[in-house]
Length: 424
Length: 176
Image (cartoon, rainbow over the protein chains, first blue to last red):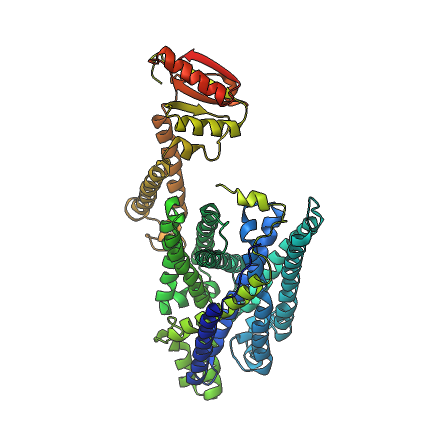
């Protein structure tokens, strides 16, 4: 049976990239402002992004199992391995939680007790936006996700030993998968509010969780395409045909459009409603982050729309690799745009507050500081890209480690045969 | 379509697997298949018959692009030029508000355009005559048809032996 061997050559490359990531984080930390805003926001950005990909992989598997989908069985080991990144993901997010309690970072405006005390809106949100709920949400919700991810993996591996026409294990898997879907739907929304939306503590949008979830989904799909084409080139997954890759391409196309639909719905409703507390989110981004704002739409809508609309493009591995890398980067960029402006604003306010008590000149400067160009905030700099590559290497390291532990073919999955013959 | 009084020799098969094998065999024997009929799309039949993929999606894209332009320009003309009204303090030219209608017109043009293109290309529509070889090919039979109008006796025999060799359950002729 085909097994993946984690080549020492891969390991060297991945360790090299992880080293680059650590180096970039260290440089950021030591060249940063006194709050280490850039360091912490990069850390949060990448932790959320990659943990989200792991979560969405669990969700995709659960949805496909529940829907009796057959085509994906030949590639399901990749998603199982992705899903298990939730464990390191929890550790990464736990570091953010520790930073929250220790006061090491000022990512969240609502975590600043002084600011909350004199702010009516934040006082009103105090019941949910507080350190306790943030910790509870992160540990419990990601904990539950880990439980389901490991359970699905465990059952899938047990299926490998379970010969014959007895599908008891798969039936059990279906129960866990179906149970996970509603849990995933509600818990991911709550965690997205806490991790990302609460950075802009005064602002809220009811669509935000869906929008972020769609971004995770496209990231997971594109990363799957990248990994799969790479592994196929290395001689693994030879049973994966262009038909399977085409389905992944279709998912990328469909969910890129879905993402755009949600992006536009959120934008247009806020634009049309014209309520000051809501429009400030886009005003800020349009005025001070235009490159990020329009680049986001070009990378995540225009590019995948015009490339993936043609079926013969989806069938070309080179084109798909190109498009996937750009769209993957595009959604990383999208998270960058979600996180950075709010963090920058909070940091400037905190700095102005701490630096010169009662000095209105400094406080004023803080409010308008975002209008100037700031590397690592206005656009991602080399340090951000290096950090991202480091996190990506960490992600792939765990994925390949887990891929190695099980045969690549889930031969006893009841849908294995269907998957082999898949023809779209 | 055309009333050319074609003499068609056709064989009916019970199963798509047998049909696929027969089509493959016909290709190996260099027999010129007129058409294949099946009650549902059979996977792998198109490449066997050497049919190139349809260019209908490309036509759809063009119609869609025309629709998008029409929708957007029409909205712009109405609200900027012809009948400017201020809605909620927004400028006359409010692109975000035009997007939903632009989208709808895109879909309308693409879908209606594709339907008409499809009808014209296939010669379908009101007044079209579409002779059917056997009613069962819309139910549970799979059919390979040969144009036997100008076939000699030898060639007809050859086709008949092809049908019996590939497991056709019935062989018939019909003039259409």
